[in-house]
Every structure is written in C-alpha cells, then in structure tokens.
Image (spheres, rainbow, N blue to C red):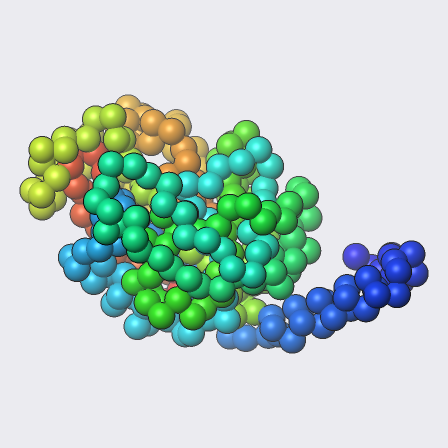
Length: 296
C-alpha cells in the first residue's frame, strides 16, 4: 500500500479503528525489523508417532536445531493444510490439531501450546502480492507442523503460524509463491516446509516398518534422483516432478507432501547450499529426508 492509499484508508476508518490499525502496524514493524538472514528448512515429518519417539529422525531434528539462530517467529507450510486459495493462521493461541486416527491416546494427549503471531500473519499477507491471502482463525497447528517443530523448540516459546497449500494450483505456482516470502528471512522468521519427498501410503509395507532402510527399488531410485537434483540446484526438474518418469509417479502419487519442498527450494539464494539430513526410507515407500538451506 502506498502512502496516498494508506492515508485515504485511515481517513475513512472510525477514530478508534484507525488507532488500532496504527497500533497493529507499529507492532508489526517493531517485531519484524531487520535481522541476519535465517536458514530455511524442509522437514520430513513421517509417522505422527515420531512425536513420542527418540529415534534417528527426532535426534536429527534436535541436532539441526542447534545450528539455527533463535527465530523471532516461525512460518510453517504443512502438507496437512490444503485449501482453495491461500490462508495464514492469525489467532493468538493456535490449537494443537490431532488430525489423524487409530493411534494411542498418548499421542492425542500431546499439546504444543506455542503462541500464534497475528503480526506475522499480517506481514505475510502484505508481502504476497500475486494472490490474496486470507487470515484464518479456525485452523491451528496440524501434525505436519507440531510433531516436528516440537523437537526444534520443545519449550513451545516461539510464535508460529501456518500457511496453507492451495490445492487448485500447479507446482510452478507454489515455487513462485514461495519466493514472495523471502523478505521474512531477514526479519528473524524461520520458514519451515513439512512433508515427505517419497510418500506413497497405499503401497507402504507396514510389516517392514521397523526394518531400517527398507525400500522398494522405485522408491530408492526416486530418492537418489531427488537428492541429486536438490544438491545440483536443479529446481526446474523438481518443479516438473510429474515429468521425471515412473519412479517419481510412484513416489509422488499426490502432490501435497511434496509441495512444501518447493517452497523451501524457491528461497535458496545464490550464495547458499542445500544440506540433506534424516535421509532414510521406511516401510518401502516413505522417506524422512530433510533439507536445510543456509550460507555455503
């Protein structure tokens, strides 16, 4: 919004509303002033039961957390919030959503009471100009978010919002939309994508769940190709994942778990490199591969 439009908007607001608007804008400016560039993360979240586990994956999340500057806030793009259009959570206290079934009560008892950030929601809404961004007060933190973030920040003391995935749009759209979030990295915001690069639940060998590294051949091939593309900065091929052959078709039968990776890759700058961790296939057709992008 330019100065002329801003003054015009202030003029038509009631005095009380205008004062509240000015107060909100001042809070957002104060909260999200300039910082050093934050890294970005793609986290393979996998089985929700990881939230209760102490294993290679959760330890990987804990280790990468030690390498991160403390963020002012977190923006998470989760595979588990698909909408028509783009939305960000804007409530002060986002609920912990247990969006799954058939698991032990102990998992449903887990809460992640991190505060929300209406200020970050407004800042995100302002930054994105290619589409309108709605402010949502009905969602919260789904398991794609809290089951991994809890290992980064177990005290739940970092404000966090989620941004939804518009299921009506192609992969290229999401990659370009991700670029519009770039300024948040220099405002102390940690941007996290949460999904899985190889994610075919229909073909999963659940009886092999506890066999380390068990993978179908197609899953192994797809995983190796994806890793090469990530490390070679071949974002174009990753955007066009549906043109990469049969192995990719099986690895990404639906796009929602894959798309958060594209948001993170879109934020990679020329002087940055991708580092892969938690790279392990489980149950034949699922991968926990995670990616950190930071200065080379």
